[in-house]
Image (tube, rainbow, N blue to C red; front, side, top):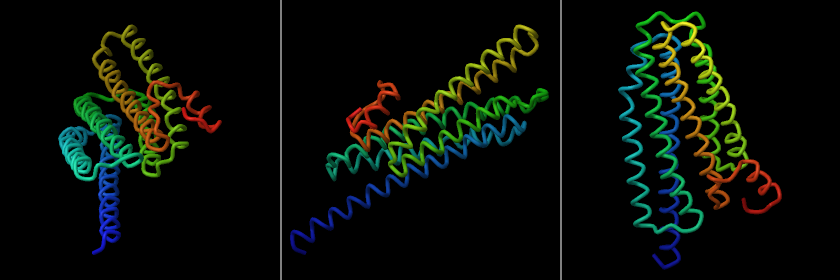
Length: 241
């Protein structure tokens, strides 16, 4: 094998490494999506066993994070990536941390859903939680889709939608406080609902973080402390955010 062939071989193996670890991240994201859907369903449908299964399966998310992190460390040590490839590895390491924390929030919702299943469901059957859960599920799915396609524009659109999650979260919090003031017997259930919507709001934040990593991968700029409107304007003008 001459030097040119050897270099091409090394380059091909490197690309395969990057593609493999990217695929692992998306598989982890897909599993977290399933955990999220199941945890909300466990609460809304009063399914104790489903909630318990979500809580039990959190270790799988943890194992995925450790495995991907080890693979990224190996690539950094053996391939010495630079420029865009280095940004991809850094973004992946950050993204799996957010996915693991999403899994932790799903575990919390699973535990609460399992406990509330033993109680009579309220007349509204947790309608607000169900709606917020659907919004957050869509946010997570679209954030992972933008990550898969490395689509910075789509990532910006998804990141902007996190505000809707925040607004709905605050609305449910205010409503829960009102219920507790009007009827002290609802305090325990209302507190549990507040913990659930807080967990959903946090999952929305983590999805937004993943969108920010997409923009970092594509444009090489950390936008975590920059307003979304300013980032949009900069990209529209063709300048760096």
